[in-house]
Amino acid sequence: MSRREFVSPEGLRLDGRRPDELRKLQARMDLFSRADGSAYVEMGNTKVVAAVYGPREVRRASMAKHDRAVVRAEFGMATFATGERKKSSKGDKRSAEVSQMLVATFEPVILTELFPRSQIDIFVHVLQADGGNVAAAINAATLALIDAGIPLKDFVVACSAGHIDGANVLDLNYLEDSSGGGPELLLAMLPTEATLSLVKINDRIPLDVYDALVSLAMKGAALIHEVLVAKVKEHAHQQAASLGTIV
Image (cartoon, rainbow, N blue to C red; front, side, top):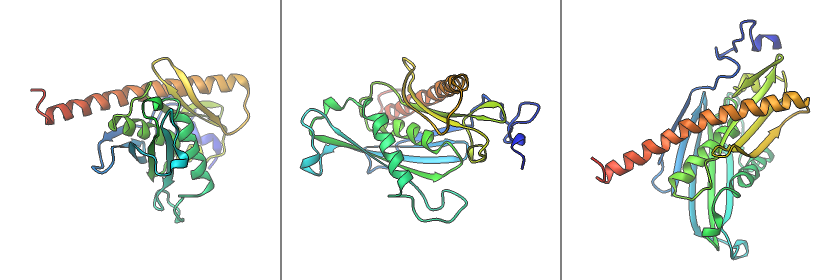
């Protein structure tokens, strides 16, 4: 397949989306009764679950911090997440890198100073991978933290953007991500003040292309934020109804 086929002359991508169009986004909260908070996020065909435990007592005293909570994260992919048979990703280099990325992204946003000498654990697992895995993981972790009642400075919302066939495209799927057709940028932001909490790009690019990709990814993140806010409100309404506090 020619790389030029990823964006048609009519400006459509292989899945029918326009360059600045997101994949369909779906989310659920409160999946697991044994977790303090949990969530499920679908971005296109990428499916991710997240679970949060804590704040709880630090398991190893040497890890405890007297003035704030310790944030830990673990990222993994199911053996059946892709079309290729492979061993579980838990413990591999890429999973360790994403786990550290999750800690670096969420630690400054969680009000850890409210929970000294405790720990908050975030577990994220990719059930099906079709591009944008880390963005989906961040979005699922945000909902799981909110479900757990962990106080946050703001939502953390993530989206990707890439430069393929001379076009800037939003929310890449697996075919676009793996095409080798151009650089991809991952961005996470705090939407209330449009503050960036994470920016990663996999290649060197001209400054004007970089700025355009950041702007496009921020636009996508703002749209995702609207969906996540609606989901949180819906979930809160359902909880209130189940408790009989609303008619």
